[in-house]
Image 1 (spheres, rainbow, N blue to C red):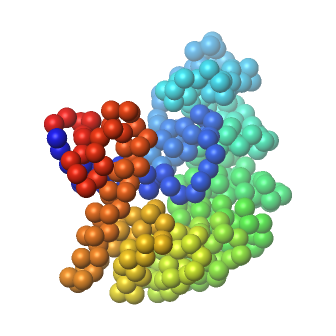
Image 2 (image 1 turned 180 degrees about the vertical axis):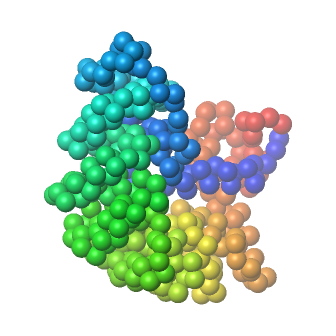
Length: 349
């Protein structure tokens, strides 16, 4: 018999990492492209590098056929794919094929530009980002001059390119000022978080623009802008007032945006700490938001009264989440006593 205490923080931490925005179940291709098999993205994971060898189905030195790429894409899209491991193999073959022959890279660029399926497009963008070349950047910049859907795809791809790419950084900064489509603008803001800003004057202009966008009517633009602002504004002069305003807003969605921004930055102030403590005391607040506030306030120095609130909230929220986890597990675990008494541990005595 053991108590599940500190270990539960791991369960919650993992849950928060997945909590960003509600989303539908994604196909294995999109899931792999975005959540762990990034085939060379410079941001999400270390680049996957494969030796430049001929495609196993083609004679040495032969140009890759459209059929061979179609076959690999078909393997990824196949409903019979049983695991992300099989998806990774197909990605690896595409990666190797593109690295070994410029014609294959050109074909992948063409497919990305004309692709309409979101899952396939996301995978192609992730794959192309592992080949930072003039051709890839040129293709993205051409899309940036297209319609709203094409511009959205362009910013997504540009944001995946290495931050040293000056043309990519410039295109994204310009989009902050000129883009009118909310979906495309939100992608540009998200891409900005991974691009470098060379000059302080440019940085201040971007921070000021992000501050304005935190009040945008579109919720996704507003949320992405707040998160980017909290990350980029190291001094917090612009980010702190915006985050505090949303953290104390009557709209629960705005409070959630502020909590995510705090979680993804090192932003600190006395009034933000006070607002977080007040969220912990508010039993009418959602458990998810109170849990995020709990984790955020841990990095602040606390008075005795504040620490008492933190400790009480920690115990209550852990107990509530633990019971909800137990309710979703096996009959043996669900029959165990609930928090407040001895708790059955599936990990041993």
